[in-house]
Structures are given as structure tokens and as C-alpha cells.
Length: 127
Image (cartoon, rainbow, N blue to C red; front, side, top):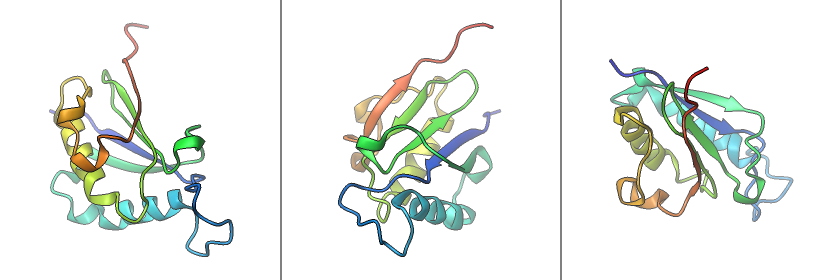
């Protein structure tokens, strides 16, 4: 059985080109809303939990998300377009959830996210 993958979306993230007065909210808020609203249509939604996260510290690569699951690499993606990232992130989260380690090579990632990798942090071994 697959463990639950947490897809955390930085809700403070605001792409550099976005103005402070954007009434639609930060890019992170918009991306979180799109993922949360669209989640009902995901084929493997029971394996992915979407959460809002206050800050992922990837400000130079806003809009940012992280994926994590017990015993797997933590993956951080950034520089996402909040208005176009939903479908590639759903695909990425599905691949991540199916993966035994959570490590996805550049070629395994959806084409739209191949330039988005910020970090792949190895899982913690032991206590």
C-alpha cells in the first residue's frame, strides 16, 4: 500500500513579476486553491494530501511546492507558474506517490517541471 504524499504549497510565494496589489492573492495562494479545487478529479487523490504551507524558503524560485512521504526523498520545486502548474503537479505527485524512493530523475519528471527542481533531500535514516 502506498503511503500518503503531502504536497505542500507555499502560500507566501509571489512570482517576481507579480505586483503586490494582485487582488487574486499570491501565486502560492492561487496555486493552492487550484490544486485543492481540482483534487476531486484526480485519479489517485487518496494518495496525495494538499496543504497550504506558510513558507518553504524558496523565495528566489517562487511559486514553490514540496512533496514528502515517509521514507522518501523530500522534493522541492520552484519557479512555477501558478496559473499553469496544476496539471503537471498532479502528474508529478502521482509519479512521486508510485515511486519507492521519491527520487525522480529529470527525464522522469513531467516536461513542464524539468527546470523546476530546487532540491531532492534524501530521507532521514533511522532515529
